Length: 374
Image 1 (cartoon, rainbow, N blue to C red):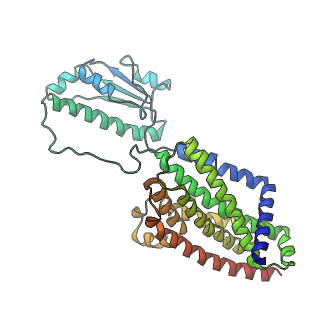
Image 2 (cartoon, rainbow, N blue to C red):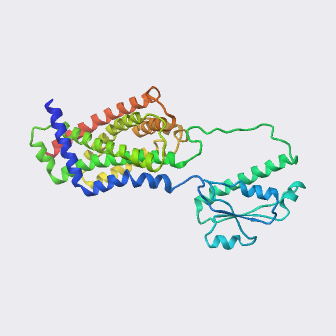
């Protein structure tokens, strides 16, 4: 009971120290507010609100149906422009895509010819240009084929292929990228806050004052773990409620409490990792390098950036020892698929075991480090 009370008050001291560290507070606010928004909306793997114009020299039912096939949210409403003015309009920055339909296009299609459609693309917007060209090709091809089947110019397709997209039917990258970004910020901030607190105590000499009191090294480490984990957990709740659900409109399919429970379990592991790295480093600069060498690969191999199934077989097995993989897996199952504890309990168990092992090693190294400092 007395030990629990000591750990509690030491943790409160840690929170008060963090409140006076304006750099860390600014990093905390940024990481759980602007960072998820920028990462979720800044890079898109789909066409969104692209400007498009049509230079229709045919003015036939087919050419008009081609122009009507482009609609939001992928494209802005189609603007009709004068033939031959497409290049100038793109130079002026008015349009990203310009589609030019030649005269007699429908007549050539009915005659069984292969007329060409010219598509001008402003490639200064490389991401949208590359993806948009595929969008336009597929849309025009599907519309022309639909017209040809209706005019009995070609036979009907032998099968009707219907594709159903599960969990993210609109292919909205914001829904996926925002959760991945939040998980990344949790990993970064928890490790940095815990490790930086340990390094700060050592550099300022306050850890020697703590050791002069009737406090064990376990009490110091445990206080830093629960205090920093609590701060990040509160920040996660705020970011999930106001930034992801409120501002970005992310829909949480499963239980929020289950997601926060998985987050709390992962925070236990991430704070233990912060203590572990802080005991290995002798300065803040060394700690920063160790964080880059450990946390970044853990995030890249967690399944958020690239699917686990797309990694080499030996690497898939190796990632089983990464708590970030299990956290990413259960978080995506809860948030996107509405999974319950009966589905994600193996991930919970894996995080608990990995966290306990990492905490044991961290405390052992921390005791040795404290003994050397004495």
